[in-house]
Length: 411
Image (cartoon, rainbow, N blue to C red; front, side, top):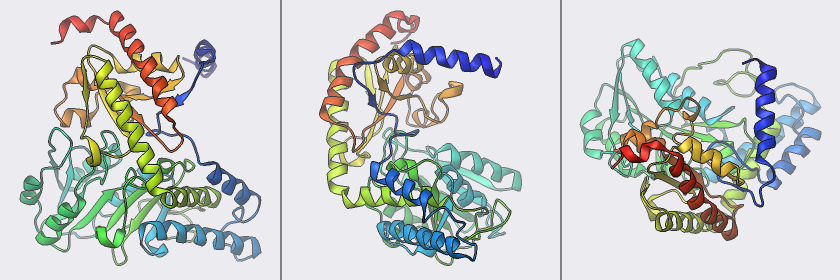
């Protein structure tokens, strides 16, 4: 299909939606709304303090550097680390790649990397590259709620291990891992092992203290805290050595070349400030709406499965439900026609319609994984929003099921 034909097709899709009577955006896993305060801070930065290059020696450059450093101080303060321990990338995926790929060759005698079986693909894919360099890759299984098997982890960590990487909060099913137990196991085995956590879905959702957490590397993403897209951060504990994976002219940091997107970083820092200044209020609101949505769906829609744990062991914003006898992509479109925006299956693989490796890892069958929806509540949502979803969703599921032949082939 040519670019013009594709554009025409997309325009037709947009026009076919019409104007829904209400819109509820629940796709914050992939992208989403930005705090107005963060947007306002960005606009101000583009006009003045953030428009210069922060490593250039003139007034505008100095002002830009000052703004960059002040923004970094705000982020560092929220997670209790030094500003010098933060490296900016352009996404959480880039931060994960830098953490993983940047460790190759740092300890030549260590040829094993250990990860959980439900890591984000931006961890899984670079880890697979290690095999080309003679590394052994071990994927630790999880139980039906997504919690890592600590006994198997302990048996697989040894003096040959270069890195252990486990996400603090799973991006897809919301499982909050016991990171203290994981870190204690690894530290007891060998103090020289690097510990990385993908904390993109932990930031703003659970308390974070990098000194208490005692990991060596942690990845963060701006859009997960309702900041602008295009900003990621890698925490690199003081004294930890990494190699760059991209090369070019450096600005104010050695591990990631190119000029920093100062306005976006300022917007990110404002979003982090918003989340942690209002932490109890926001997380309580999200969790209440999450539970209202989960309870309403499971009570009113037959043949549904909750993916991931319940209550305080689950991220406050995360709702992931499999709808049996239903194709997730079709349900996503049906809901979109009614102004409800969600993602199906794995948010990172839905375009190629592959089942989520995370749902398969917790024991879901292919058809159950394909029939899943991922929805995330936010500080922007209201009870009326969730009630609208609970009004529309059962009808949408019923309509898709009535059109699906697969119902007759499932138990």
